[in-house]
Length: 292
Image (cartoon, rainbow, N blue to C red; front, side, top):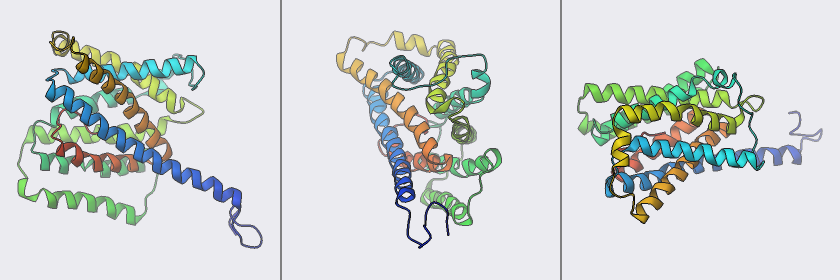
């Protein structure tokens, strides 16, 4: 007899069954929410970076981080959500998430333009086995043989699909594999840092954005990205401003949905959802956003 699930007569415990159902629903909805947010932001970012020709994807990322900070801080002030106040231990608790996010963002932007679409899709699939490996090493999580075989079947299927276009580009390969590593590590460490007794999911989201916005801003200034953004000639265009603000809000939703998906599911599930989304991104021709 399983405690809490069956009574002495062998019938299912209604309380245990009802407790399991919301958990399964939450897992499914959080994964769908993450996939939907990922896809929606691609459409908006595509319009900004290609249709309007906005020259600064890094500044766009900074706007998304700023929106995340403001929304969460206002929500905390109004007691809608709760996360710990800042102290000196926050940086230690959060490390190395901000570095991983910045690395993921930079390598993602650098890699997508250097490879053909089929090859890019193949190499981004390596995020999945890397996530499985890091979860085993860092989180001490064990997966069944069926799941392991399924992961490598995804890789094999991607290679078969792109078999006619396996162009070699060493620089592109390096950037994509680095992006895979940063993406996998970011997902695993996000899962690890979301202990409710520590930062919790809102604390991870808020302080991660706070710590990573400064180095990203420095990168933007040093590369001339910020100057290009300030000199952009569409800032008086109301439709452009609306879509820019929409992208910032969707950036918050994407960060939140990523944390939520990791919270209710495994980092591996989040990686699989992200990998499923990539072909949709490529179908719409968007090459300026790193896959999450």
